[in-house]
Length: 195
Image 1 (cartoon, rainbow, N blue to C red):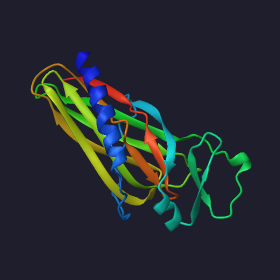
Image 2: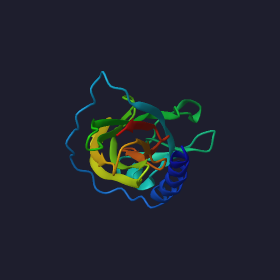
Image 3: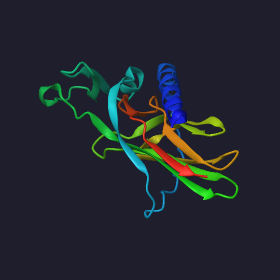
């Protein structure tokens, strides 16, 4: 469990650095990923609205306003929003971590998010999953521009150096930037598997 605490600390630092240096690229089409086996289990956490990318909002016909909690949000130019409020949760994020071949200590990491259907789709994803086991740690990253999408998921493999438990955490700085400039922040779901 001491490794898990170390991973959480590393995730916080890396997540803040990742969030500070973001610059969304031009959007282009991305291939959809397969969904996990419905009989399997994965961890899901909410994604929260944490601000707005002003350049993306302006480029897509939105203006930036501030809600009663001091958080920016985007609306179509000239639109009316009751009491200047918008829902806080913009979707959910997940990580699915499963042992594929325990004799070779190999697992598959499946991670992603779903954006609420009544919100604009994501045009850019900056995502990272930290993996830690008894033999060390690694980071799997994705920086994906895309056409507006409400579902994004990716898979990467991980091989441990030996037997034991391994833990995967979505970095807390992992974000999806929506077509109106809204930045949705993952709350760091986690999962574990015995390899």
